[in-house]
Length: 176
Ligand SMILES: [Zn+2]
Image 1 (tube, rainbow, N blue to C red):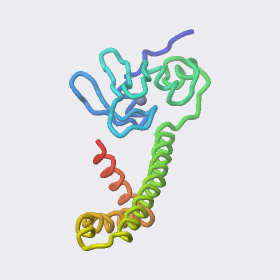
Image 2 (cartoon, rainbow, N blue to C red; image 1 turned 180 degrees about the vertical axis):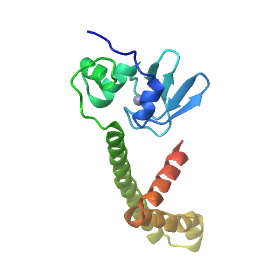
Image 3 (spheres, rainbow, N blue to C red; image 1 turned 90 degrees about the vertical axis):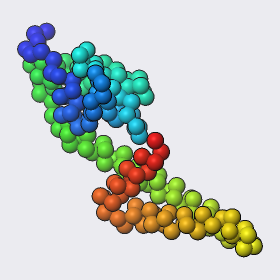
């Protein structure tokens, strides 16, 4: 097979694919495009031009990267990266990546809302069964927590995307 061009830079390629990376020491780190994660375990070594994810174990070079990202054969990946001529493949990677992000965000929204609703039911049940003022006092935090929880539920149901995304980040950061 005739190679027309050298391999493109892996950092540049990842950025073109919509994967955000941060410089850390001699490598780059970011959220893995191959599995869902809250804090980054996807590392890229610019010297060796390879990636490795400590979360899911995916690893490889720029060619296997796009193969895995877009389910391409080796030959298709070479064409996609303009390393070798080949049948052009229609992939709008930014759009595709964006769609994936939106999809996982929507999944999170549903899961988060369900979780909040479950917690609210549990809290309400506790409050209903409190007999004495002492018992109420011990559970005072629920009185503080409940409106926050309901506010978050409203935000997910009615808020705009930006507000929801801020909540998403807030919750994600809190879990780290
Ligand atoms: Zn991973």
